[in-house]
Amino acid sequence: MSDTYLNLVNSGVTKKIAKQLGLPQPSPLRRYEPGQPLLQGAVLVLGRGAQSDALAGLLSSDWDLDVHRHATPGTRYSAVVLALTELTHPDQLSDPVLAAGGVLKTLPKGARVVTVSRASRPDDAPAVAAARQGVDGMLRSVAKELRGGSTGNGIVLAEDVPVTAPSVVGALRFFLSTKSAFVDGQLLTIDSSAGALPDDWERPLAGRVAVVTGAARGIGASIADTLARDGATVIAVDVPAAGEQLATVANRVRGTALQLDVTAEDAGARILEHALQRHGRLDIVVHNAGITRDKLLANMAPDTWDSVLAVNIASQLRINEALLTSGDFTDAPRVVSLASTSGIAGNRGQTNYAASKGGVIGMVRATAPLLTAFGGTANAVAPGFIETEMTARIPAVTRQVARRLNSLQQGGQPVDVAETVAFLASPAAGGVVGRVLRVCGQNLVGQ
Ligand code: NAD
Image 1 (cartoon, helix red, strand yellow):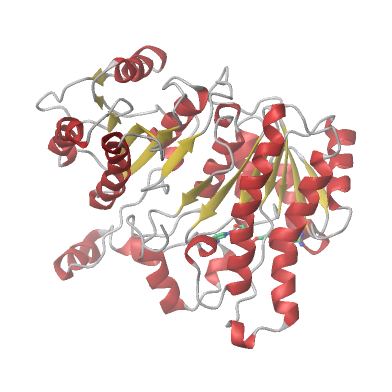
Image 2 (cartoon, rainbow, N blue to C red):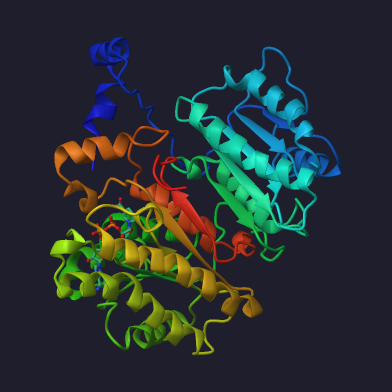
């Protein structure tokens, strides 16, 4: 689905007119291509202490980046990393944060600002908690100040997680890369040191078997493409009515197709049977199939409510239960579910959808602990406005407004959601447990 406005304000005369009128000027976002360098210029790593040094060392020695510890006049940094895990008082924020402020005006389009900090806890000394929580507010505000498709995101470490833990490294790479093009203003908590770094960052899912529901089109088809690109064998699931499109996707990713309504009582058993028979294992489940049936609650018919809850949440609970009790989903398994910003912020006319998507967030939080004994995780991705057939059905004026209501002033693409799913499905994300990562361009609604 294309965004005509975005194309117009980035070409010729219409670009000039839009500027003169002070209209929103979204920048086209750069997406990931295999082989693309992680960054296109030097990275400035700010912050003091052994943990900042360890992060800077990782960026320069493991990833071969041009790392500066102080801003060098005349250098255009493609990324700024604020290593803030050792803060004990808000006073210590000023040096690194103001140093970052000093280079913001010179950042090129599509630059990255990433904070690495510690989660504040109820038993922290007040000054420690203030410093830690202060990072969150600062980062969200920086993200709102950035222009030109640049993003700001934060990695928040639980107390005993070292800065070199696989999920910290994986999250840092994800946020620095173009894979996170539409993830903005988000703080991702790393709960544990679990997880493993891939041998090859270009194929982190090699040897893994993944099932993607609702894979015939839209976000699901893009998830299938992206997981396959990352090395996974993909089982594409969708309803029989979408069989032709499903076969096209399955063939494209050199995977297999399974025609299945996810609301079927035996859906979990059928997915597992297909995976074991055709591919010998199952490692990753992406619950992407979803529907909307929007109505104001005052006008909601029982069927309209029930059908959305059945597809969007009840099916996921039933499939997860079948997999978790099977004994065949135990090798660092990954469950990644599609939530929605509507499930966080609410949306008029979407009580049924928001109940189901809020339900997904609760479900992953409660499912994750059931998987940790096997090195497994369950997490959710909450898209904001993504350009798909689902959102193409929104009336034109509402759609035009909805896609501008975020810091990047545009809708995301299915691939933006897919890249985030692929990150959470990867071995490096083993320390992200029961979390929700929003892919919404820092949507103005919701927290
Ligand atoms: P879409 O309507 O384009 O595709 C959904 C797919 O799910 C379709 O192929 C459909 O046939 C399949 N499906 C529906 N019911 C099914 C069932 N019972 N069994 C098997 N397959 C079924 O939707 P999309 O925009 O690609 O959305 C994908 C997911 O992302 C959904 O869960 C949606 O709620 C979520 N999401 C989308 C957006 C957005 O802006 N597009 C925003 C937030 C969340």
